[in-house]
Image 1 (cartoon, rainbow, N blue to C red):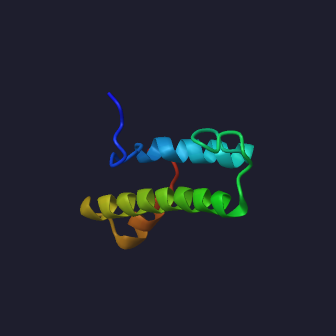
Image 2 (image 1 turned 90 degrees about the vertical axis):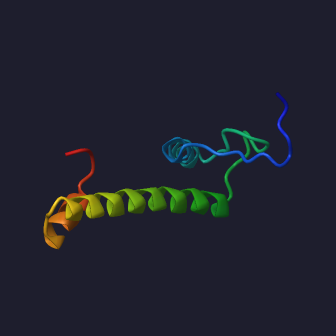
Amino acid sequence: MAKSKKERRWLVPNKRAKGYAEERHAKVHQRGQKNGHELTPFESGVRTGYLQCQSDHAGLYRFKKALSEGKSKAEAKRYSKQIGSK
């Protein structure tokens, strides 16, 4: 099936974040038309911002989940800052 020009290309957020982290580490585009070209400072910054946004979203989700479970704001804040599933 051929892609139409109006089709949206999207990825599951954690897969996009993984790809962005790999590209930032390698400092080179790893897919698409620019594959193999060096990342510009702007493109590197976009990837950094996206990764930070994913972290913020996860923290806010955990904070609201802890509040809904009846934890205090201080406990919820501590829980939301923990990395990993505990």
